[in-house]
Length: 292
Image (cartoon, rainbow, N blue to C red; front, side, top):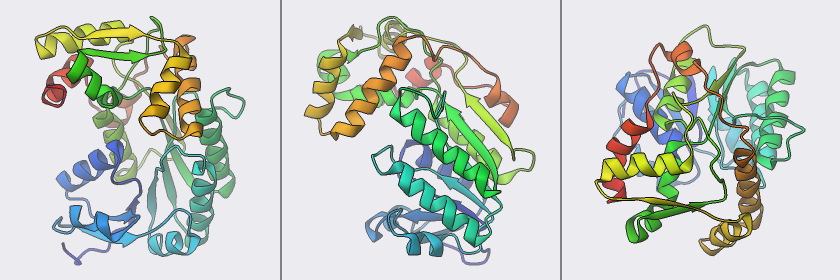
């Protein structure tokens, strides 16, 4: 780990799907950055990475957030979608304003709206508005459903050759996390992205049945999608440890998908990065070992 260059980019949410991929891409580009982690247990993953400066910070502790933001010009804002997310992210925005941060790249969500029936979309919109009101330059990333979200169904795909969701035959312009991270990396390292809202989708809209067919082709055996009721899906989420608030939010999310509100395809990935998005076939091929 080098100390020769003081990072002016802060990455939060470094251990999640998007955060891991974003740090990987920044490292490949040899862009120095500071990574905020919740505990020293997370430090080992970054300890040998050149160009990474580590800081322990807790979104629930404004003092540690302020410390993490010292000297930072651009920050990537990502928290878990928990009941505390709106408060945590609002605290981050307040501390970023005090620290003189010039730009926040916020991971938001497709169709974020303060009037949405989906709690996740409401809190994202509230934080977006708070960033706008702060006067800090912003870039909002609003991705659709993640392809890598299928990894949450890994156990039933491996054990039963099936996965389940309350979504019917609705089409969703599902997107690869690698492309979301690429847009984030561009916004953090290049000029021209301030004031932009990127609605991030994959290259086609697919039903879960079509996803199952493409996954079957990649794995060389049949994977079946089974449509279930929202009540059954909620019970399954609770049984594997999801908190009630988060489980209810995911049911609202899937109702939003079921209504056909997430099928639009955009060119925002190519507009932001100059490269086309990954197809679902590419995702299925690249991640096939994880489903075997």
